[in-house]
Image (cartoon, rainbow, N blue to C red; front, side, top):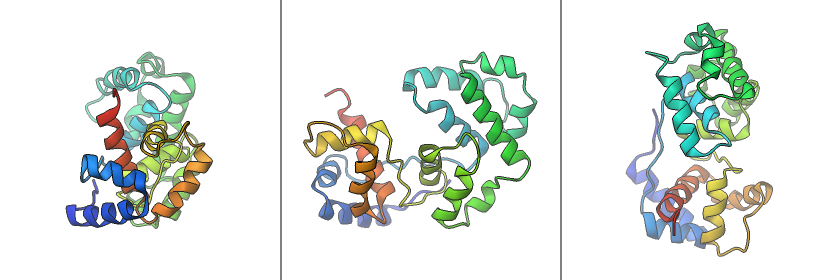
Length: 207
């Protein structure tokens, strides 16, 4: 589990606030963001897959049923599990296939999560994307939360797009491509920008 310290976060937030008015508003509202640090494990990757492209409420229910099946959710445990019963937790066919594909990559050593921690962000991202079932959003979320890379950025995240739209007083959300271009000015702290936007969005979700 890796997360930046308060001093590092403060420096990053002040740099971002000076560069971008929308992020300055977010920083003024939420202060230092709450870093979503997780462990660099198969379980973390599996959770990212489960939560992708469905509501948080639905994902919470599915994830709780999945976790209840295991004392320790490892790649091997999932590969050895009753696949019909596992899918009955609420997984779609493609998501079940992705969980198994990622588990196989880890079980066979094709994806070494320990090795990822010592690679550059570019090399680690390339290895993650080479595994079927891990797309750009999943890879960047893992790099950001599990490996603590300050410049990882899940640019297509709907919550980030909506938060930015509201903070920047835009009529509509930027496209993921335009949002990625916008975020270039936030390097090398794009993950910090993402956490500022997440925290602001969660605070203002129902306002």
